[in-house]
Length: 74
Picture (spheres, rainbow, N blue to C red):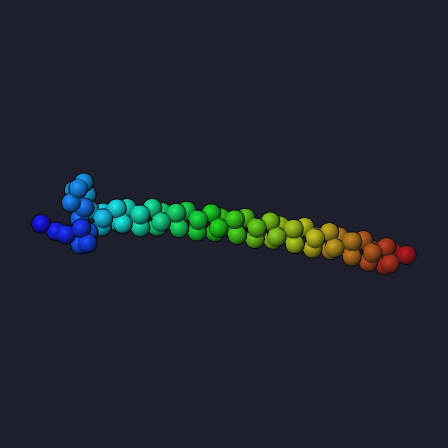
């Protein structure tokens, strides 16, 4: 018979180790979910920043081309 200090609850017959392993599994699942959410958010932010930079570059290039055309034509 195991003592209560060795991970066995003599009253309920359940193992403290099993409960601890379930808690560790829950924590691991929570950590994986949080990491996936953070990665998705970072990817979305990077994509939005890239799109904004591309739009700004296109607008600046169009403005510069218009200025050059006006200066060269005049």
